[in-house]
Length: 252
Image (cartoon, rainbow, N blue to C red; front, side, top):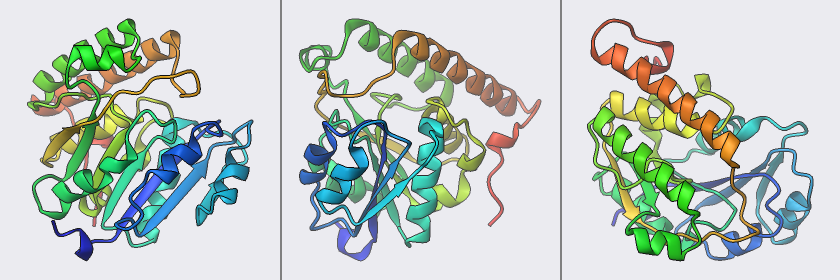
């Protein structure tokens, strides 16, 4: 792999992650990661204190909560400013295995993919055994099937909180215009697909537990409606009827 020739920055959008942040950070393969950035989105717990205690070099705090998407926007702005060539986004809730960072980054470094997701749904049995609620698994599978068909992709999971992006993707996709809420990720995925970037994924173990953060059923439904809205704009674009600003590449 060509990892040694690429600057890899890991970003963690954190919110009330005091119980899981250290475990996530300790399992990062720091020998291949050039920089780790934590952006705290106005946590009510000791997330910031713990981040500084364990020696994370770059910790930025939002004084007011900006939302999941708003947090990621700050993460990517800081990563690009730091000169990142590959950016790995990992939720600090320990639902995703940080040890897989080299594999996500490697697919980009070796010019196989431009975007790589961590896929928690290798099999139904593994996902449920890892603690994923049945209702969440069902929604995940249904949405991923529909979104694959819609976008012409073959991803195992569209709802992943572990993602790798090339610098070119972050400099092309107008993610700054996306929602500040949870639908940010889905908007980004469809934008990248529409703009012709190569999307791929690798399997990761599903790990659900009490300390891990997740959105509730009501927020999940709002998220689903937001995803459908993005898919509507994609349909109009593919039909040549209308191109929403979210689907217009940034000028470089």
